[in-house]
Image (cartoon, rainbow, N blue to C red; front, side, top):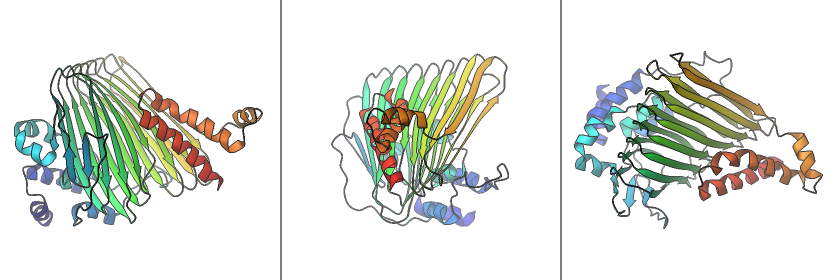
Length: 407
């Protein structure tokens, strides 16, 4: 531990040093999964020790440039740039630590995670974006574009939304990495009383990237958080979306879509942790699996003893498009009081041949018919976002998966 502490001090000797050491200790104490809970290991996304080591012993550097005319915040590797936006405080995390030390000490650094990879990212983050939306700020729209060209990257970003705000955020995560890379990121979103936040997330990285992303929202009284996430890139992906529903009457909605083909492996995790009275969580995820790829959907509806009169729902549906593909869904209910409503469901199936026959009887070829069915099956998850980017990408990915599966 002393050697690691010195490494952290040498590479990351900043105001977050004590936080880094504490979460790295949690990383060391977290057991490595032994797979005893399942008769097969294929359903898990395995991370090698070498892949995790790159997040700590990382000597890459940023080069080149990146711009997106639609973006308010751009992130190229660990370099963060932003446009001045009326009424909104935006900076990188390094600057924010100096400008808002009380906020960081009392709130942000109390969130450490609950997964080995999340602990490691929180110990080794280099930079990230920081957004502070003051109370009573309405109709905020932000676009965040991230791109990485590095072999290894570890980012931590924070969004703080005050009381009585309405915010819509779109985050695009891209990478053109041409050789094996490991990217880790945590995004923590703190939502004040009665505020409403929509978060639209797209991950479309190259097949050389191992992508580890943890998005955690903390909701106060009557706060609402809707997240629409689409994952299609990466060789290995762990995407974890969890809401800590502290506030009475808080509301958490998730609509997720995942695509895998070739030899990709994705572990998509969506969970609610409900503490406030009268909370509501609704998680719906859909996926498409082709080639020899692996997709895992899992998550928990966790309603604590004090969270009476609450509701929690989880539903996963996956289309299995090839004989070599593998899909599994593992929803869980952790209910600690009897004054709640909760249920879960999961389904894994092939495309319905009767639907294909119906479309072909109208003069539509089989490949187009399959693409139309899959597009309709998945698009319903992002249509509610009203986000054109996500809807266009889901349509694009659906066509590409069917075309690749036919080759």
